[in-house]
Image (cartoon, rainbow, N blue to C red; front, side, top):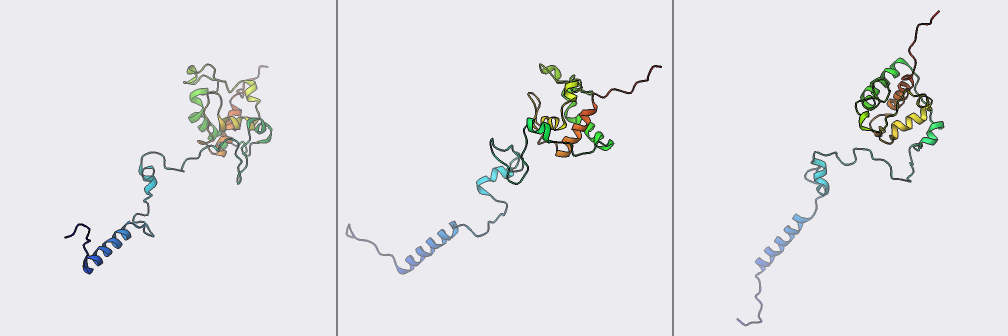
Amino acid sequence: MQSGSRRRLSPTRTALAAALLVLSVAACAPADTPRDPDARTWIRNMWTGPAVLPQTEARPAPERSLAIDAPRIMNRREARTALTNPLDETPAVLAEGQALYDVYCALCHGDEGDGDGELARHYRRMPPLTARHVLNYPDGFVYSIIREGGRNMPRFGDALSVDERWALVHYLGTLGSPEPQAVAR
């Protein structure tokens, strides 16, 4: 054999090599439909992991963004005068508000709203909800505090529905009500 000569493949070997090349390329090409319809290879761990699934939890809108298909969320100053409680103050609404208060508020604000809950000692100041100035807050302002939170208060906009927040506003208005007392004659 000469040093620069090439070896020719037989036609059978050439056909076999071409068929092998075509099959390997076809095996690597993406299929029209995935074998596993739930397979999302680029985010597989997010779908099967124990954490919250992607896009199942609402996130606050980016700062300075505008809602297109929903009412704009008002800040506290606007909510103070513009938002009014759409629920009637019925015994059922007050009972729901009290149940929500017991779950979400009493731990910090206390059973009667005096600011003496179990967690109050861990904060410098826990506002009593029975104070006259707090009871004079407009419903829209109280609603916005529940929705957005306060200095140390967490926001409950994601935890409570709109009607639950308004029921809680009605109940908070009853906290400072004086108990009926016997009139001295």
